[in-house]
Image (cartoon, rainbow, N blue to C red; front, top):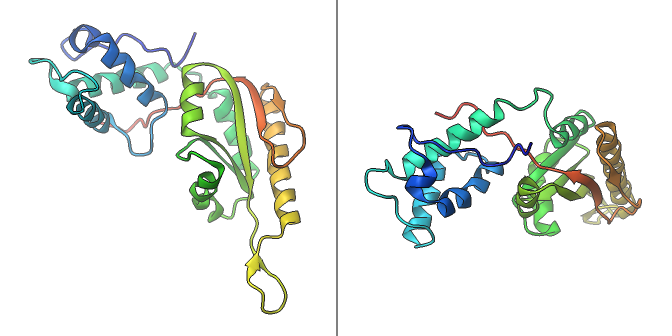
Amino acid sequence: MDPNARPDILLSDGRSAVDVFGLETVDGIWPHLLVPRPGESAETLATSLQALADSDVIPQAPEASGGFAELGRALWAARLAQQAEWPAEGWPLERIASRLRAAGIAAEWALQADSDAEAVDALEPHRLEDLRGAVFLTEAQAVQLALQTGDAHVGTEGFVEPRPRGVFGEPEIDMDEYRNACEAVSGELVAAARAEGVDAVWDGDWENRVVLENVQLVVRLPRDDS
């Protein structure tokens, strides 16, 4: 069973959201619940829907529908109900992230970055935690893996401190130290994945991604949303 498959979405009065708002609108917004950004809620979901309607991407909310606020609440509630049935031990990528965290490595499975250069900047908060490094997937990769099981091509980053070169030199990253740090992070990722029964492929080159085979990204919504 696909934990990310869209269930029937019912409005508060029992009507089908598809009947009221249309299949294209409901199916089009569902992926936003699969890879939520920090701070997202039923209210921000409704705001996104209204923005799409104002841009003529989707139809405006029908009269007497309760509007997009009603649809946002219904979608959010359906996803929370869905995840209430998930296994307590979590999904493979969650468990891998827990193993890595115990080893001092952060895992970002939906990093808001479009390139490796942007990813390095986006990982800065983890660097400030004095962690050893981080592994990541971009948000675009995350959406694909949420919608369909596939191979995750995971980027890795080792954290090292710049050191002064010479007596008066500017601090620089020692490339040997950086390479060793990246290799260590990739090796930890491979070990964590295999410990959780996930096939991991890596050629040992610190510049190449680790491939986790046949995985699906399953992300939990915050449970304290009203």
